[in-house]
Amino acid sequence: MNKSITCYEQFREKLQLVSQAEWQTRVIEAFAETWPEWDASTVWKKCYGRFDPDSEPYISLLLQQGDCSRNMCLVEVFSKKPEQQNNTQDYPDKQLGWIRGRHFPNDPKLAHLTMVLDIKQDVEILRYRPSKRCTFSAYSEQTASKVFGKQFADNRGAQIYAESQRLWNAACEERLNFTIAKPIRWDIKTQTLWHHAIEGQPLVEKLFSTDGTDIASRIGTAAGGMTRSGIEPVLGFDGQAQLQRTIKYANELVRRVPGLTSDLSNILQILRVFHARHTTRLRPLHGAPHAHQWLECGDRLGLVDFDRTCMGEPELDAATFIAEMDFEDRDKVPVDELNATFLDAYQDIAGKLDQRLLAAYRCHKRLAKALKAARSLRVNGDRKARKHVAYANQALRDVLL
Image 1 (cartoon, rainbow, N blue to C red):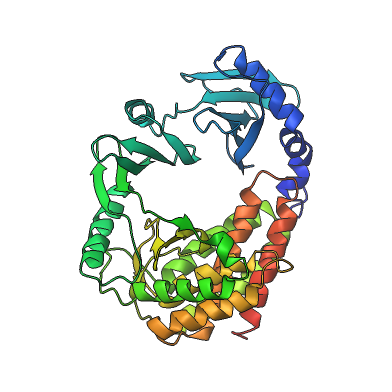
Image 2 (cartoon, helix red, strand yellow):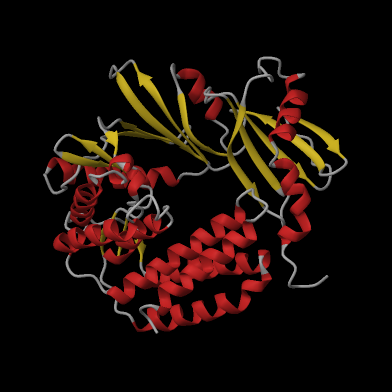
């Protein structure tokens, strides 16, 4: 087989088939014969898709029935007949191999999910990633308010809870210039992290409106404040750690799109040399303060999702925000102006950033985006990946060469 051929060229017809609404409807209708509580005639929408050509299943597709967040079906496609499992349906398909359906919330890696959701009333599923985690909101009779839960497939929530407690202490001591949710507990039995809700509204729409520059400045000020909070997260994540993660991403990208080998090799070489020479300065960071993490809470902003809280370089948090903005539609959103405003405000609090290090982290983020595109369930994943790698190359060459 020609090594330059991408897996997308080999799987193109199968990817096209499972992406069709008609095919998805037929699959749901077949499963509804066994699970009659589903109304197969209603609209089912895709809320997650993954393409793993070297794994079984090689396609994973999560479908949701209308706006009912708990009516979901995980559709998995195998090249060979899979081993039988409880709470699943399997049937052969001439074009794809074998198709398996799994009724949410049955998930062998999230073994306690069914129990937790059955206990709580008025549960809304906010984000479900099969075999990894599930985030949901629920009404707590004990506190007479909304609470949030996140169940993990492992015990990583224990560390997140410990960091949340440190953050809450800092907030109580007024060492944070933004609002956070009060942690409730880490339930080791069900591997579920619980915390209270923040009263606020998402800021994304305002960021992209005529008030965008003011919002970008406020976010920059709040994000910069994290570096001055004085907390000391246990986990560290510096440039070398980011480099090792990016090397893994690049290796997977090459397996999927061999034509990227030369570009990725050149990029990694530049990053290796740069990070080897760079002196690290670590501060407390949020880890992923992109635009969707922020809420407006009156005079203050609110910040959520501290899963990646760490001791790291301020350029990492700054690059996370601006790199996510880079992928917005520039015909509709003044990306460069908002990024510049954010960076000015961020540096007013966190101190002057190393522009070369910022460019390096921006490159890392673009390579992560390339892999995300390559993993997504789309027929043009290879073309999207090439585009993002080209952006990563540009981010480096504009500053580091």
